[in-house]
Image (cartoon, rainbow, N blue to C red):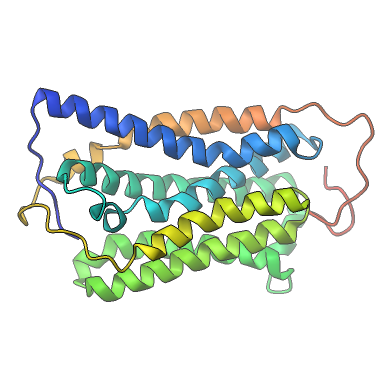
Length: 272
């Protein structure tokens, strides 16, 4: 991917910060949409720690759905400003790390809280649980290959097609995982909302995927420090807000009567 040089005045730097804040707020709102919807209309609470682990997975779902739209390829057709595209590129990279951390926290948290969940990581597990595990593997592969592409001089066009295909597969597997769990997304309204959440950004990113980006700047190299700094503080702020949102999601009043045992997450009944 081409590197965009950094040339900013004080006014331009302020404009870039505002754009970064607006873009970050939009990403945060999308990431927290599943938490808010289920906080208001979802089933009764089970346990604070368990629901917090579930909440990290829901927040990761919103990020995973939105990341395909936060790519330079998509935004290049919308804007010719190199600084804006550099912000998008940095946010895409930083948010992918945040996504991986949320997915790992989701899986590890559930295993630590209920060791029987390990059964769902085995080849004999139900398909929807293996789908969630495979989605995590695909996200990891996407991050690793993105970092290794430049060093190994892989073809950009070929890598881009594989990147888009794996991203779409990860989103589809996540949808299967949500549908198969059949506890948080069960009603027709919830299924429609989940389909919209996951499907619309994916379709938009694939529609724009073949549009060639404009040539925006000279092919000059810039130091990695400033590029990594762009979006890093914003992503850390978003992480804090996501943690707060997950805690608020988990801190729901428990039901007066404990719900009937459900096959998720343990086939023998409620885990907690």
